[in-house]
Amino acid sequence: MTILRGLGWQDVACALNNAGFSKAKHRGKGSHLAFRKADVQGIVRLVVVPRKKNIPIGTVYAIIKQAGLSVSEFLGFLK
Image (tube, rainbow, N blue to C red; front, side):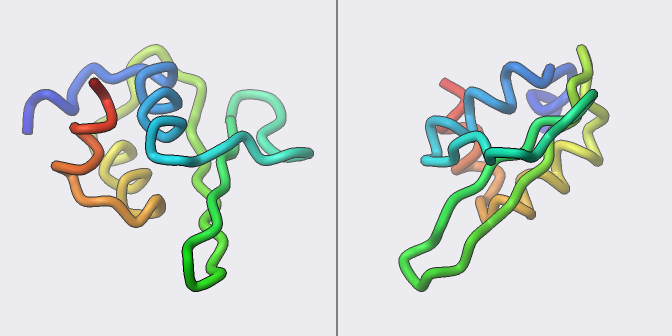
């Protein structure tokens, strides 16, 4: 999955917005942004994204896991 390499925070934030996440209020100060989404079961997912020009691939995989998405779903939201 080399397409996940070189993703910036703006790409990841856009994908999370497309997946239904919104910025969490009173969170994400400084060099990080926080996004939240409530599932249909009422589970609230909080995903933290570092504001980096290039996010390491391991961090991108962790963000995808925190969001409860598969890699293919995440790639679909990138477009």
